[in-house]
Image (cartoon, rainbow, N blue to C red; front, top):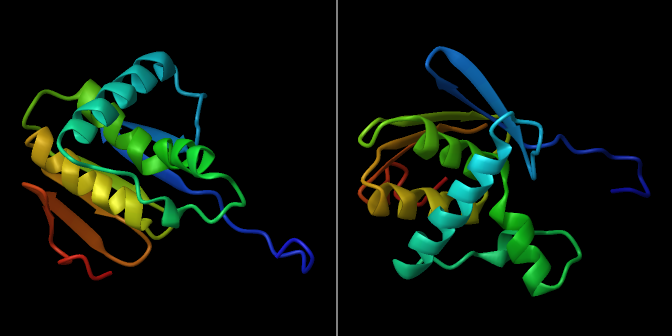
Length: 144
């Protein structure tokens, strides 16, 4: 792609909390609450790992080793938006996210696990469809 001059769009996810739109990019550090978000993300990763979630590194297409791929997947934009939703909303609140690209397999599995472990409904509108995650399942039946 580089040789042909093809550029891809950066993944961008947004969430509205208390009437304010919060946007996230992959590995985003521009948010005013970035330290809290990354601390929450680390805690979510620990809880989901205990529940059996394992990152699907086949989703990461960059030329990286396995550990680096796992790290790169940890901070996709929709995961940061979900972490902010957990951080900034009361338990039981539905988390609604809009994403400009198609959700990757790993983020889809992450959202399913998060909906089960945190007992939250998560709605993600990606480039192709709405995904409604509830109790560890998605409305698309894992076909998207």
